[in-house]
Length: 392
Length: 154
Image 1: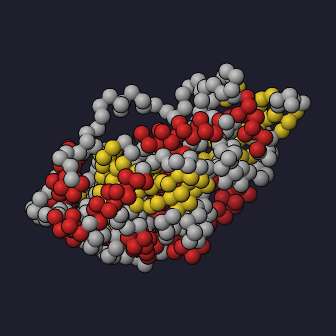
Image 2: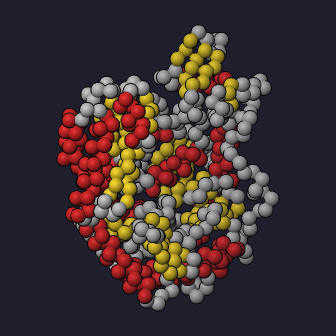
């Protein structure tokens, strides 16, 4: 009891959290005399035979363990052996930690290899920022991310070290499509300046193809990509509800004869496929004209159909309605049977027809049948659900 | 009985509101669908058009559909025959198929598998090793392979 009070008095930030085994959790405060500041150490202390000191274990946060290594562990053991009470042990422990902190500061922890590459990066950054360029460069505070941007196009990269010890870059996000001949990651050890120049060159090169695509987006019924981004070099253009084609432009030859693939109802696809494979058609393709105009000529139409207005918008929402069975995706099945089973997990609450649910649970090896009830995991959330086994 | 009703609805939705990079047209035979998937951004398959076959078994949705690539793919989880190793395509207890998964969910999952291979559950052991230990080489080969096989020509 005496010891208990001592701990309470001297280490107020340690909280007694469990009786058997006796456990404290909280913070010990040590003073770093070198830097003249307090250091908070997270600990968990377990003393199964308290107030005796047998089998006492103490856990530290990761950073402390990494700092002091194995000899520290041995030191703890020897303090434990010579201490009379837990409070004295803690007192001595703090003294040892303070001593270690002092030694550590004198030696200056060896972080050289990391600061090396960081210094290099800083130098590179300073250098590219001192040059005039249309590319804006910014870096996150700890230099883990570097962002290049130009004309609202951006590239975010992360400096990293390859397994061979070379400095390389990893692309975190990029608005750029893959462009033959340009690849930040392919060649090793590019400098920031080289990356900036390559990025700028790519953006300038791509402007032409983006212009062609913008025109198509404005005048055609594009169904894919839903929200075109600069890296999308393809468009799926609808000609009718049953026929569309995928157009892919070559970024290095934006107005050249593009890749076209028709998709849809077989007969129509065949007709159009023949049309674009005709040699005359390819001859008629004018490199001077825009892709949009060339497509009109190629397909022999005056204009592209536009997206029907009213059909869209209102039919958003999920695949399955709230009142529908999530297995057959419908509300009513034969004989006006409505979904009559519901998952009891209040966050799931999915509806099922008992016939659908039964049929699924029956498929599972893990099901259980008790009297006329079958039990198994809910096909949506995995919680247990059950339903009646049909009579016959 | 529930199969046709559900399938019609799923296909209608896929045709009318396709997810990005997934193209599906209804065919005369609902049990065999031809699907096209466009390789996702920032993967070696970016922009490549992959043709796939989707076969709906009679007991759908109580058993998973069969899905395979017709266009060859260089990928740790896709073999030479176009078969895909993906948890969702297999029945429990070994797999994760559930009847609440829609065709759309499945196709989006395959598209995402293209961009995020799973080398821990490989079908092509050599490619998985390469992906794990020499990612640059893997990406180079996958890119080249996709360019050669997934040509967007008519």
